Structure formats: structure tokens, C-alpha cells
Image (cartoon, rainbow, N blue to C red; front, top):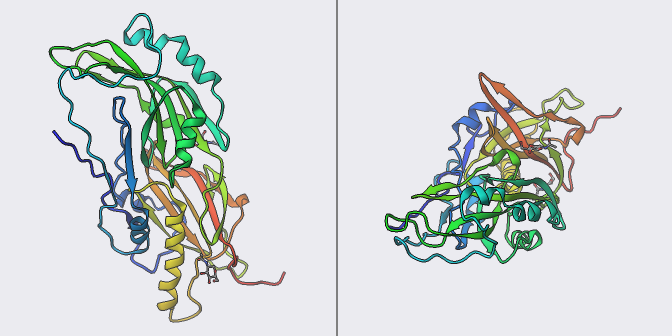
Length: 360
Ligand SMILES: *[C@@H]1O[C@H](CO)[C@@H](O)[C@H](O)[C@H]1NC(C)=O
Ligand SMILES: *[C@@H]1O[C@H](CO)[C@@H](O)[C@H](O)[C@H]1NC(C)=O
């Protein structure tokens, strides 16, 4: 049986038909109108997995209205044959070969708690018994040892990779089936690459049953790059888990232009940058009856979570730069649903701070 999972279907939803309608509070209707991201569970097993996103197409879609083109496909997974021998992982196997001893095996905890934080990264969690299901799956590699720097080096080679999750996985030595329901195990060391936020809150995949064989996970560590992702033509700043609440400018005018959400690519601030720049072309071509067109010179972008589950990359545009002292909006409630801001950044046009010049 061949599986072909199309990860990306639709890319962008709009706050309103252009021109954007100012409404600075997080636009919950916009978030809910976007297709939910397909949260990928990392495949079980010792082979590698790769996912490619077509960022050029994603950018085209980020600036277009409307859009419908699939932007990435996952490669086909090989068919599994009953009781077929599986590749051997590089990790140690506990003397007593069952799920319980795997989860209690000190070697895994020791490796996780003593691992080096890779250069250019910060640790987001340590020694969990679950792997992350984050936004923007970019595939995984198997490693020869629990080498956090080797894992980060893999991430560094991939455009848009923002974080990694490394862990030990208890996998079957042969494909479990009726004739071999609970085979001996092998320990695979996995390095999973994400174009999103690898956080303890999304370390929710604690394994699965394959026939009578229990796949479990131990020594799971998360790391995120510390650098602010670069966006050509803009200067970026990290805002943590809060976004900007902009006041009116010195003429008493609203500087907020509107928002978009991208829900089926990786987290990539350049998508929002492209939307900002192209919005200006539109606004200049369609000026208001009175006054000047609004020009996007500043944007904030972040992952929006609803009750802890990622809904996509939010993108809010402004006519003027605001510094991080205005980053006080960490989300909002609607009814029982909690919408929260994660992994937020702001970007200012590198050559124009925008806004009116008011004398003090
Ligand atoms: C930001 O949110 C993530 C995910 O909810 C959490 O793991 C992290 O600790 C938060 N960071 C800060 C600085 O609060
Ligand atoms: C920055 O602002 C200038 C002046 O408005 C504009 O010409 C330029 O296109 C903007 N840069 C980007 C990347 O949007």
C-alpha cells in the first residue's frame, strides 16, 4: 500500500478582501477560517524521512488572493511487509526488552540530561518521554549517537528549520504482524527537524502499539535556534510569546492595517514580509479617495495556538514601527477557547520607519 500524504492544501486566509480592514485585536474569525494545519506525527521506524516545502510557491500564495495550490507533498513511504527485518538503530537496548524497562533505562536519561546545547540554539525541554508534534514538519534523520550538535547541524542545512527534537525510540526489529506480534526491539536515535516551535507543550507523541509491540520514546530533548530569522529588507526582533498592541500614531491615526494567516507551510517570517511589500503595491495602485494610501513598514508574525494546538502563522501589518515595549498581547479568550501567541517576532522596514513625522 502506498501512502501519499499531501501536507499542504491551502495557504492563506485573509482578514477581509483587500484593502485590509483595521481590527488590531487577534482576529479569531480569521484564525478559525484558516484550514487547520495538518499536524504530522513523526513516522515510527528507523529510516529517514524528508519533507519539502515549496517556499517560492508559498510566497506566491502569501501575496495572492485567493489561493488554492498545494504547496508541498510528503514523499511516499515504503510499503511494510509482515515480519520483514527492519534496520537496526544505533542506541543501546535494555537487558530486559520491554516498554517498561526502556522507559526506566538510565542511559537514556543520562544522555538527555548531559547533552550539550548546540551552538546557536537554546534548550526548550529535557528528558521527556514523548516527541513533539509541532508546526512545520521537515522530516527526520537517524543518528549514530545521541549527538545534539549533529542533529542541530542537520537543521542548519535546511531552509526554514527553526528547531529540533532528538530522542531514543523503541522500534521493532521486524515488522510486527500476526506471526511475529512482539519481536525484540532495536533503539533508534531520531533527530526530527521542525520549521516551527519545538516546545514541551507540544511534546505529545508518546509512541504507539504495533500489534503487541509497544513503540515508546525516552530521553527526548527540544532545541530552538536563538537567531531571529532573517527577512530581506527588514530588521527583525524577537518578542517572545507576545505581540504588539500599537497605540495610535502622533496624529491620532490607527497604524494597524490588517492580518493574514498562513496555515500550511513552515513558520517563515519572509511570507509575512512578502505580504507586507505586496500590500503596498496594491494600496498604491488603489489609493483611498482622500489622503495617502497606508504603507506597510512594520509587521509582527507569530504562531497562533488555540488551546495549545498550532493554528498557523499569523501576520499583522502596520504603517509604523513599534518597539518591543508594546509587545504586551499574549493572546485572548473567546468563550472556552484560549488563543495564545507563541514565537513572535517583529520586523521593521530597514530603510523606512514609516509613520507621520510629528514635531514634539
Ligand atoms: C512560550 O510558549 C511556549 C509554548 O507554550 C513555552 O514552552 C515557553 O516556555 C514560553 N516562553 C516564555 C518565555 O514564556
Ligand atoms: C521599505 O520602504 C521603502 C520606502 O517606503 C520602500 O520603497 C521599500 O520597498 C520597503 N521595503 C520593503 C522590503 O518592503
